[in-house]
Amino acid sequence: MGRIFVCLSKRVSARWVLDADITGFFDNINHDWLPRNVRMNTRVLHQWLKAGVIDKGHLRRTEMGTPQGGIISPTLANITLNGLESGLAAHLRATLGYRGVQASKCNVVRYADDFVVTGASQEVLETIVVPWVTSFLRERGLQLSSEKTRVVHIDHGFDFLGWNFRKYRNGKMYIKPSRANVKAFYRKVSDIVERSLSLPTERLIRRLNPVLRGWAAYHKGVCSKATLSRLDQLLYWRLMRWAQRRNPQKRKARLYSKHWLELGNRRVFAVQRHNADGDVTRSLPLYRLADTKVIRYQYKVHGDYNPFDPAWELYGEQRHAKLKSLDFVNSQRQTLWLQQGGYCPVCETLLDSAGGSDDHHIVYRMHGGSHALSNRVLLHPVCHRRVHALGLEVTKPVPAQGI
Image (cartoon, rainbow, N blue to C red; front, side, top):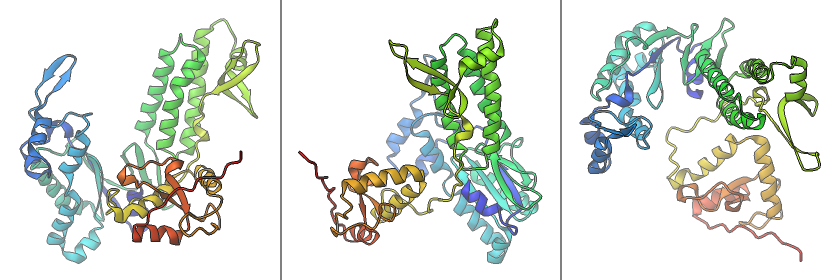
């Protein structure tokens, strides 16, 4: 998503996009091509590919493709398409020359088996890019879908990974949840409500909340506030119909006062738990999509980043801190700062502040270390660089405790 925005958002950016779709990707990967090109134990790979799939109690042979949903399938799928970006770049240099490549503005953005290719003109994409991509896929037993693959202008927009990318009349590019994705999500939520007609309100809320939170978190990095608010309205009416079907003899006003409780300064769909004395012990509200804080995605991972390479450990820690919610990071940093008594365990001098310090993992992530506070310490930025450059060992300070 971030890469597409970089390639298409500027005034001089590419204006055309090849929205590619591969027919039956996981079902058609060539079993002869994989062992010759995947760098791993070919015997184990052959066993994976030919193991078969048990579906409804019946064993089905796998003569081609990889089982969709299998543990190893996403890895094999990525390996299958490795070389798409570099191969297309080499083909463009051989066909158009260096200046022609710059003028073509061709960029490949891929996620698993979904990819798009940008271009300065429709002609370049249709006459140069599409034939090469077709040949690239044919070697692997794959082919582009003639019905779904299309070349579109950015002003008309295209869907990719559940988002719609489109440049509007004001020259600005907006990324929003796609209509198809929104409809599929609302249909899923509506089905959950439909199947919960006889369930208590608390169980309905517990079923809905993980689904609502997950979908909102996926779209919080794009222009989704209006969509989230609209879905909250649709969900309100869907829940009102659910309440009416459960209590057809009651009026809407009574149902509203029963199920939409006043929590804080607003009414929300919620349920309250009471103790034996009849006192309210806690409330369980339905998650409101519009409460999701929209944060623009800014931290694209470096192309050469390897989480298992010690040289990239410092970069990984810094990127992890940036990606976390700011409030969450600040609260955790404050806890670490208090545990350390405000001192850096490397130079044993005072830290200027919790926010200006680096968050270091004692046991590196590449060695199995976790993000738990017990495995992290705050260091001066210069001390942090020394630790990684010199391979120094850091011990977590033990907080002083009174008797």
